[in-house]
Image 1 (cartoon, rainbow, N blue to C red):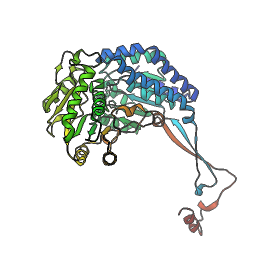
Image 2 (tube, protein in one colour):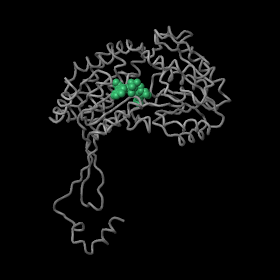
Image 3 (cartoon, rainbow, N blue to C red):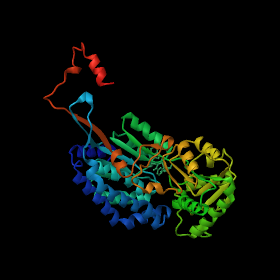
Image 4 (cartoon, rainbow, N blue to C red):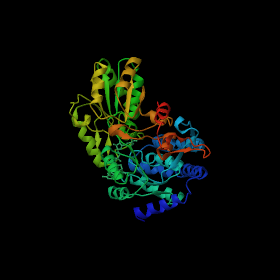
Length: 455
Ligand code: NAD
């Protein structure tokens, strides 16, 4: 079936009203939870086949997050979906006023490869919860996961409700040529612009979950050992192929040598002296990304790591120092296991380095000084972030997750997903028995009363 026919079928199904009742939506969310449980091993194996991601990481950062989100959404959905009463205004007295959350219709979800199950299905939870139908386009770069998604979801959902369309750029372009009611895109800033341009032709609203260079500041007041441990975890998880991974470190000069030593110690504790043999360390997703990342190794001194094996798509957890400010590794999003470490003396220098770059998706600071914390959080704009941790903020469904500026627009997770995939419809109801005459012509003598009412 081509994209046009598929969307036509989804539109017809949506217009039938089948997806609108809360019972239907909850039933579909329960189905999604069931299929994830039943095909858990299949998904684990597919992700492993794509880039040797360890099962624990696949569970913790993909399937587990999905289970948590689905359970939370099922628990809260009836409350979220209820019309919300709001106060009336004097000018409209008497009236009752309320807000209805209404599904958009048929939504397109375009996913990247780096968390290939989570990033395809987490938006789907919101789309279903809000009462939409959905077409999911997973990434062609992780073909095993893409085909597992297509096969499993194809078994459990009717395609007029939820369909998975596999393919690359051409397939995506074909989908983007159709008139969806909403587009939810996760991927690079470059492709985000293409998606927004295509959406603009039909005035289709979009959420863009993009990337960028997420900084991490470490000052001299923090507990360096815990900071190093958390940073090594967040940076080398998924072999650094995480949109919210700390992209580069800014460490206060007075503690930089100690910090570098602790980073080395924790890398060795996590992955041993030969990480290529570690069962806990994934591979780079393909040879193009391997070449791109290997190129960065020339941009400075290798303090630790630097080993690379193209056949295996392996790049060792690497820490770099002495990087020139115009180096590519400090210009582009790294999206791999390479951590540049820069120094600063005054916190204002760190803020300056961050603020000359586009607004990042994530931002981290390790400090024990509340003045410094307050200063940087105020001075820097970013999608979301953490104080004294990295990456973990996205595991809280009470925090909206999304970027700002070049790192994206819109947000999701928990209630924010439901809101993202719902149109907010405002309704005012007036009684017919009372009709105050101020607004009607002739206006003579009425202006002073209108001024009093609207002052
Ligand atoms: P990508 O932008 O290359 O691809 C994303 C999707 O767009 C894929 O499904 C792909 O098939 C499609 N696509 C690629 N080129 C296209 C084109 N020219 N026209 C139309 N569609 C096209 O991104 P990626 O390499 O899969 O993922 C890495 C990027 O995603 C990084 O920048 C990362 O930071 C970002 N990311 C962001 C988040 C987030 O939640 N904000 C999460 C994960 C990844």
